Image (cartoon, rainbow, N blue to C red; front, side, top):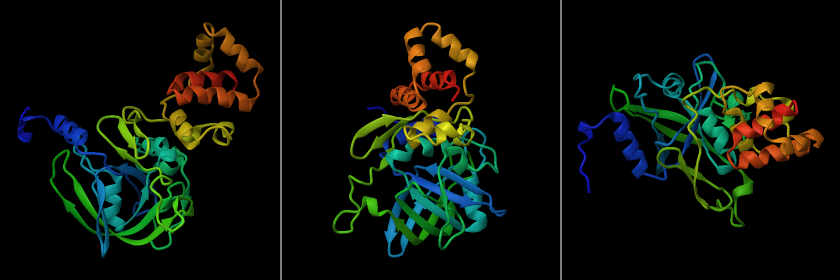
Length: 292
């Protein structure tokens, strides 16, 4: 067994070891607005429930290690004292991950991730329609744990109102743990699906994903693609050109023939096969080749 003094290793390495060993961690998908009413949506895995009377949730947007800046969620919570915490489930995990991209201030992550804004009843920030459980909260207190990169900021939230989808309830009106299909964070790119096991979602932090809002209506309105499919397609920094698609199909003549003969729905199904294998580049080549 190795012994580590936290003061003797880099913050990045310490962060990785802590997150790799402490999990699964539930995800607070936090919706806030700034003082001008501009929405922001971002996930945080430093999160849990801490009291039922009063109902208290706490999450922590840490200061960025790379440049010691703070996140928009923290600044919004300071200025408006309101937040909606939306619970993350497997059908929305790719879109949730896409929303964690470091988009500039003023960019609406609801639009970028393709998630739906729903008006709240007691607070100003919107809820995420796709989330089956939503907590409207007031911010009681913010505790700053330090002033250097990596320091957490505990946002202590009191639940004012809960919204729960009937689709996840059992016959007794309790939340069915199989139906809710929760996901949680592990270390690195790993997540865990509560009733299935671990899976990977590449972090979308190195580049800015184009966002679901820039996908064509044909793709966004597809009856084949799921929200997770749209999240994967939107998490590229550029949509491939027709030239790149043509280059790929020079060695894939049989696949190109399928595309030429297929109807739009058939093409979507074909692209989805590759998305299910996380071969997003090939899925895009297929869609581009068909002009979709």
